[in-house]
Length: 161
Image (tube, rainbow, N blue to C red):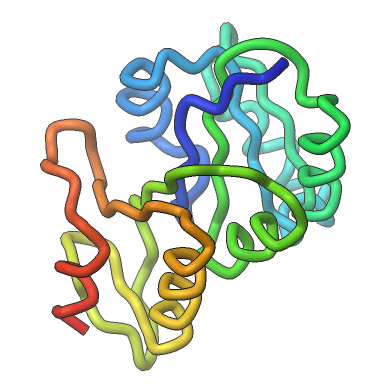
C-alpha cells in the first residue's frame, strides 16, 4: 500500500525545489501528480513525467482517477509525494475520499485579486474559503516553501489576507 509521505500544493508541480529538496526530505520514491488539466494534456503530461530523476516513478492522475486509485489501493507500494496544482483540487480530492491528515502549501502564484501571504505564496478569497473548509474537515494545513523554512500555521497566514 502506498505511504503518503507528503501532500503538497504547488502550482508549478514538479520543479527544482520538489526534485532537489522535497523528494529527499520526505524520502519519497514516487510522485503522484494530481491535476485534471495536466491529465488531459498528453504532451505536457509527458514533459512533467520526464522532469523527475530517473529513480523516481511519476504517475499523473485527474482528481477523480486519483481518488479512485486511492480508495481501491491501486497507487502501488512505496513512499509517495502527492502534488496538487491548487487548493480547489485538493479539496475536491478530500471530498471524493482522499483521506489525508495534513497538506503543505508550497507555491501558489500571483494574479489579479491575489495577495502575497508568505514568500511566493499568494491567496485570494476563494482560497481562504477552501482552506477554512479543509480545516473544518480536520485537514491540518501548513505553509512551507522549502524544508529550511519554518512551517507557517494556517491561522497566522490567514491574518495576512
